[in-house]
Amino acid sequence: MLWTIAVILIILWILGVISANTMGGFIHILLVIAVVMVLIRVIQGKKIL
Image 1 (cartoon, helix red, strand yellow):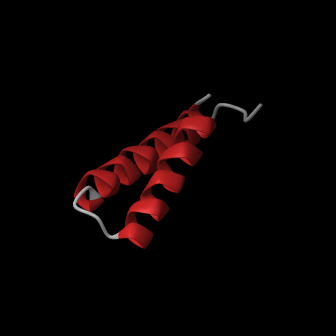
Image 2 (spheres, helix red, strand yellow):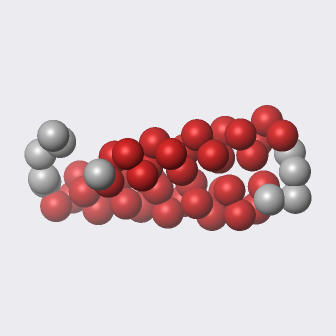
């Protein structure tokens, strides 16, 4: 589930970069959240399903 959310946030970030709209800042915040979630998952050492 965590990986699904991270992938969705990264896709939204890429769309934000491509479209360069006013929501770009918000999309970058979502990307940071996605990266933090993935790092937490790696640090905790849980297996990927």
